[in-house]
Image 1 (tube, rainbow, N blue to C red):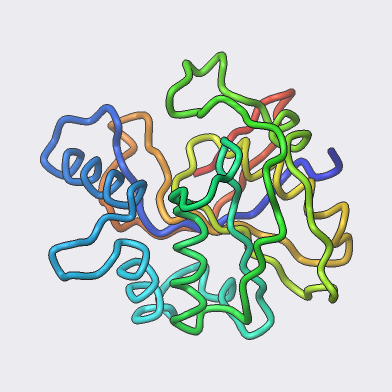
Image 2 (image 1 turned 180 degrees about the horizontal axis):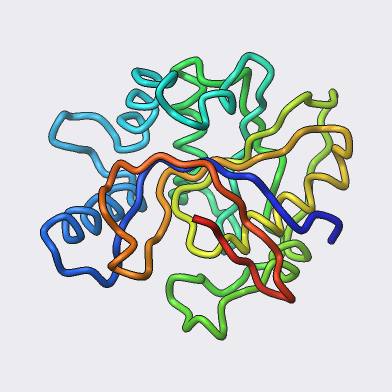
Length: 214
């Protein structure tokens, strides 16, 4: 893999191990996101997120990710995609485009070898960036994008993103590629403060593992 560092933006955080009221609320928000549930407002979580970003886009440190040149690409699931299967990054991507946050979307990155789901694996057994890279392929487009933003729902360490970006850069070597993830995991409860906690950070390759900051 050629790329050892990827810039990413994120809007929300959640605390899987915290027990405060806010931590419990963040877990509920994560479940809504992962299942793209219909909220009390009557809209899907993906649409709620897209509208929230559009409403306050100038306030966010990742505002320049969503411009008129940006192609949004949903991150593949760990499993092979089946008909009518819920694919939350795809739904988020479509909601962002429907809210004019990007030029268009392209589902050109796909999983060709299924991997264990990270959320159901102990840390030592979670797929590494190289495994993600080797399990994906890119369908070439009829044009070379100026900018790509890879879209995902939740990030922990960032192995999927590192693998995906390295696969994309092989086909689009002259394209600026960044990632946007709706929610990032704050494993240490002391590092969690608010659900809405926008940031821009980095995901780095360290040895054979991925590390995210913040």
